[in-house]
Every structure is written in C-alpha cells, then in structure tokens.
Length: 181
Image (cartoon, rainbow, N blue to C red; front, top):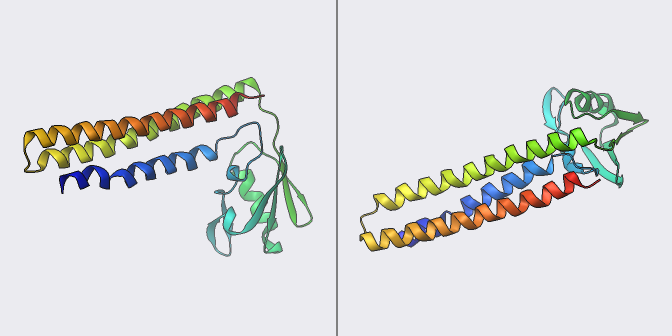
C-alpha cells in the first residue's frame, strides 16, 4: 500500500505540468496562436464566457488570428473584450470576422515575455514542491519500517526531480520560441 502513495500522485504531477503548458500557451511569441485569445472573457447573453466557446478561432498565417463568432450579433462584444483584455492587439472588424494582426515583438517585449516565462515556470516548480511535500508528509505518517520510508522518500525525490527536469525543458523550448526573431 505505501508504494501507492508515491505512484498515485503521478497524476497530480502530470496535472501540474499540463496546467503549466496551458499557462505558457497564452504567452506571446513572434507567431500567432489561437491560445493567445482563447481564454479572453466575453460578456455575451448576460454572462461571461470564454471566446473559444463563442467563436471559431483560426490562424490564416503566421501573424494573423482570425475570429468568427458563431452568432453574428456578438461581434462588437468580442471586439470590446479583446480590447479590454489588454493583450496589446488591435482587432479589426471586417463584416462578421475579426482579424488581429500580431505585431512583431521588440527586444523589450521579448525580454518582458522571458521574465513572465520565468515567473510561470517558478509557479510550476512550486506546484511540484507542494505535491512532493504532501506526499512526503503522508509517507512519514505511515506506520511502516524506516527502511521502507527512506526508500519511498528516495523514489518521491526522484519522481519530483524528473518533473522538475520536464519543467526546465518546457521552459527552454518556450524561451527559444520567444527569443526567435
């Protein structure tokens, strides 16, 4: 049973990594990505909804995001939400389609994104540490021989180190995307 404690938390570690990936997908790079606007909150039909639930988002080329609301009556609401989200984009409405041209990133904006990337990566590492500490306290509370506790704690540290390495790899990959001109 004690082995289940460490192996059972693997899904928590994976969830932390997936959350980090989702967070990083919204970071702006030099290329257009639907993730940049998917989670913009739009006031429509009397409630707030994410943009991905109200419109089709396509990427016609490397520097353009095209948004086509399924209900043509909310085009202005979507435009207003994008402006209010302070993403640094100026949406252009052409009939029932909203186009966002992603301006090239300056060196200053690349450095800001790199700093923000570092903060988000640190949040990911903190999540891994918290999960590790939860499991560590569960293992220490078990009524099992000290040798087994020691082995479980070593396994836990090894698993946590693997996930921290994955965070580092993800961060290096995203940094490369951000800094590519």
